[in-house]
Image 1 (cartoon, rainbow, N blue to C red):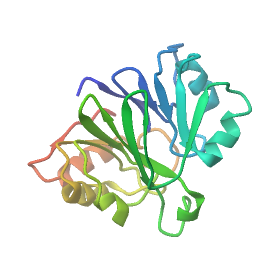
Image 2: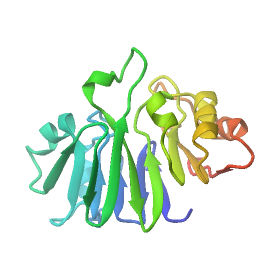
Image 3: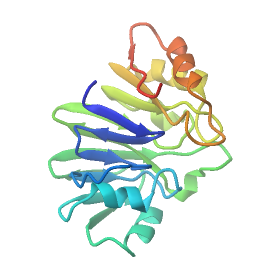
Length: 206
């Protein structure tokens, strides 16, 4: 999908104006309608990248831990979310679900989230940093952006099995090839091998 971009790692942009976890943004863009933040870890909440995409009208949707950081420097409207919530901002419907690992790194009680957003009639799911959880198995979506890097998230095999349960129209692997501790560029190819042939896979990080 040409309207979905991955700047780096899990830094995602849809329709050139809806950003998720801006990270290592090089250019001054200032075109964000909405910035969604899944949690406050450095590779998901990078203040300098947020500054490069927002303008005075941009709205930030984020977790409590992220808001505590952003409120110190940003005057934009900030909507704080928790897992299992629904909302609407600038005509974009969004739903949150818990993003967590089983017993390490991203603990469920921290309240980190993933998002399913509806933009121009298409449902996109951005998982955040998570294992293949029961909550994710119940997600209904058209486009699944799923982490495959291992260690901090599910690995390619786990992500492939999850994708086959969710059955999106399109799956795009994320969260690999950039950060120490995650798998390299081969992770996207390994993920594709694990996905049912009836589900389209697009590898953006190559």
